[in-house]
Image 1 (tube, protein in one colour):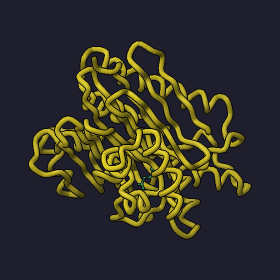
Image 2: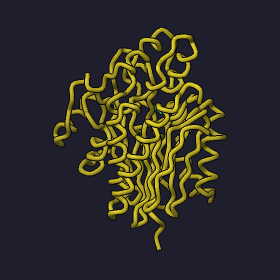
Image 3: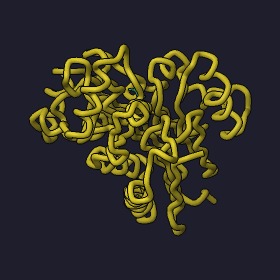
Length: 321
Ligand code: ASP
């Protein structure tokens, strides 16, 4: 008999210090995570596929301005938005991704169309937008992705050297006597799920890191780095310092350690997040599920917006360690 279907999501990791948040803000995050988990859970309860559940959960996360994906995405150094997304089906190992899109309202839907109808795995920039348009997906004016909170964050990050994880940027400025309203934190998003047929899927979507150089691509759209799913092992979606997750092939490494070393999901994910990534100063976390329905949500930062929902059971959400 198959395990009970389950979905897990994340909304980004970083320096989410407790005292930089108030109860009302926290409540808003818990509510958003709970509603999105419930939507995914309903799809799974109705016999829907893991692939549909993760696509829908990430689409809803893209719409939510609390998180750094879709509406509410971070700014590049050029003052623009460039979005990345990916999706993978563990049953078939089919995958789809887009990177550097600036006008696709729901990058995860473009990634899903790549998986569904294209012979290719990834489209980028103008080509990705042309593909999305040809598929009838909604294109928006780039100003759709603009939020005042994000803009303020970027104006401050611009004066510093380098890039920052969105939550780190928010917290840093909050402690620089130049407080940014903690309401204005955001986060990269992702989902993993196991469906009633025992199939796994993963999806990830992001605006990237604040003040990134235009044209920079992170781990989120790279299959094996920010997203991976294989029915034989697990489904994984990551968040964190993308460059290190790329160098570590973080998502695939969890799967590979289960396959080659025979590790449990928990041990494999722990090794990647707590041992291997820190060796190269990789910061962040991941959510993952295996075919038995085990769920793990490890992270090596102070916090990660996260949660999971098993069909028939109320969603569980958390922010801090
Ligand atoms: N991993 C994302 C990137 O590097 C950022 C994040 O997860 O916050 O683009």
